[in-house]
Length: 449
Image (cartoon, rainbow, N blue to C red; front, side):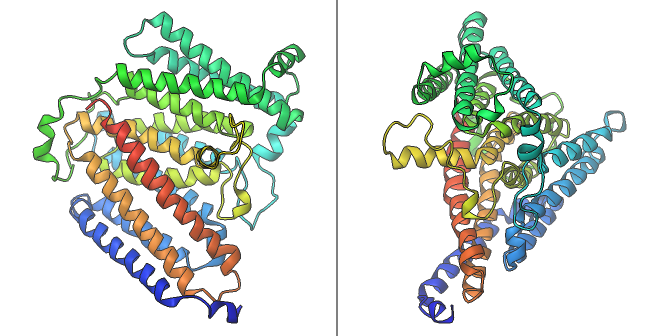
């Protein structure tokens, strides 16, 4: 190991760390006005960055990173509750059961998939309880699809009649559910206890590739129709330029619609259907729990910086809750070939990323709905500050990971712990942050404006 470590090109390592440090300083300088104006968020953000950075220098902490995000999420929910009560009138105070419900749902979510190394193989909900109770698994899965179909049908397609919207939404949801049943029959038939044999025979008549392509085509056409026909989500953006550089510090308005209806909600629901299709069967009920968390968070009237910090925390915690970890062996390839009939690096790569980062992508879209509220409350610079804070955290976390890998390059676990973490950091930075948070999230936010 010592001789191998001496073969590193230290000049390039130092150059990379230097560039990452410069990027961190620049992004902190850009986000400083907002962090200083929102003192509570600024303190939380600084503590989060420093604690996460210090954690990268311990191999055991890297292996058990999910514990860090679960505890941070619990503390953050508690702070949001007390902050919400502190800025609302007494007759409109947030009841205590709100934070209790948030923490309770988080407790269920964190026990869904046991990840990490310390408790590897320990019992959890997805691998121990649900396989032993397949009827309960299918009840939860059916409820999740029914809730999604209800929301798709209720929000409907823009400029389409209620009947046409309901028929299209229910048909698309049924096609997605049928594909998931057929996929489970081929991948894990032991989970199909109680499914009628006639239904399985009917589904076997069509190949999995054709079924997946049908679902993806339906989602794509619905997305295109929603984008082309529903461009009325925002007010006139011409008045936004004068306020673009001003930190958003206005208090929230109770009367503002949260953007959970109309075109924005339809786009979120269609994205949810795609992410569910790309997830393992035992993980599908988690999206129902995520929806419960989102609806509880709506009642807390989050400010702009609180939405951003919530986005960071829930993106990371949901990644681990769905079975992810900092080990290469935890990458799930089972849904990376849905609808792919031949060799395609790009298609498999996108589908694999969507499968493994389904939770973070969902929370990006979900919390974008809360950003719409701030936009309608005349916080014109909300998107700019949101992306700036996300970029600041991404740059700082990447800097600490690169610094840890450089300083600990002779460590015994450099290839089994720190190097995989560096690869995951690249995926988080380029895939989740740049492609999802900035490009897709920005496009969803700016759609219609």
